[in-house]
Length: 180
Image (cartoon, rainbow, N blue to C red; front, side, top):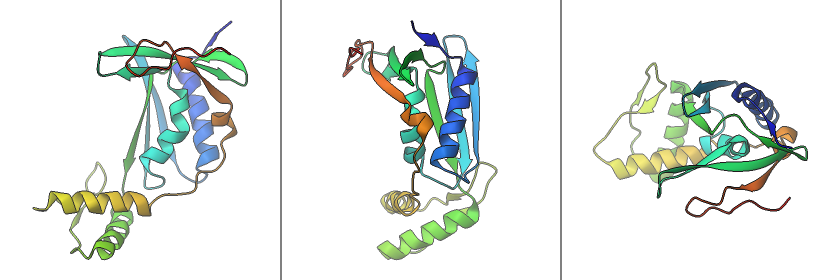
């Protein structure tokens, strides 16, 4: 029999997994339940890249979205060998930079490419690189910033206790429900 976890219970598991994978990094994990679904928003400053955080928490998503057909489908998972349905359809990750952190990373990236260092703007939404006339250079700089700021991902027993069993098989590129 499938066990159904609420969005808040799923958020609690995510908090534990993040503490295990990224000790010392402070994350804000907030659940939101609304008509038609639920989601979890993770916010943090500096630390690991968004893709690193997403690699740990994506196993807790109860749904997937197929933009080709505008379809939201179901993911099937097990937790410690018991089949569960997570209460959050999607998990969103947002990383903010402090000005000091971004200045150091951008300076290193510009040195790598031989580019002049652009100005860093500090705002209530976090620091960002001031727009210049060369969009391609800005994108190269920010990709290198991501590369320079990779951190080691520690083992998360909580995330590793979740196993993907498949999805409902209806979306474009869906894998279908796998036999347990």
